[in-house]
Length: 142
Image (cartoon, rainbow, N blue to C red; front, top):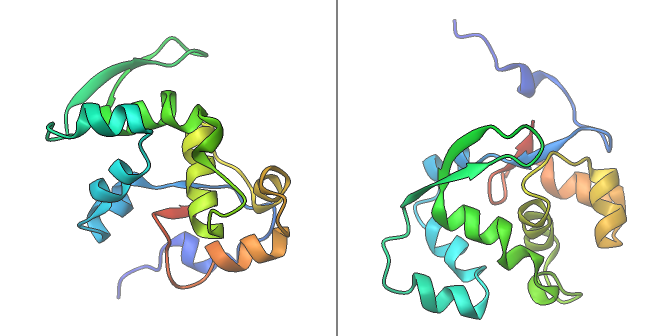
């Protein structure tokens, strides 16, 4: 009998940290790169229009100075496009706003309480949205 995953035994709370699990997203959504491209700013939509988009780039963690190979599309989203004022607006749906906020903060884990502060939305509503059976955009507990 297979062991249940630990995460399936724990009930998330407003203090449970979440992040975008890009590995999960790649395995479960064939159109994940299409969605990432749709998040690009106009300048980078044009730049990435003719590229395959799955190129890797070296990224240096500013805190640890550790060099990591990262997905180029994810990198440009996190390092540039997510910093634009128009990246998250009041009209952005809740799940999309949560996803984009993770991109904007470099995919650092955040709790529903922290997400609520940034998005000016109720923490319990955020928890309900991201802790249900359906996984939105790979947003999962860390």
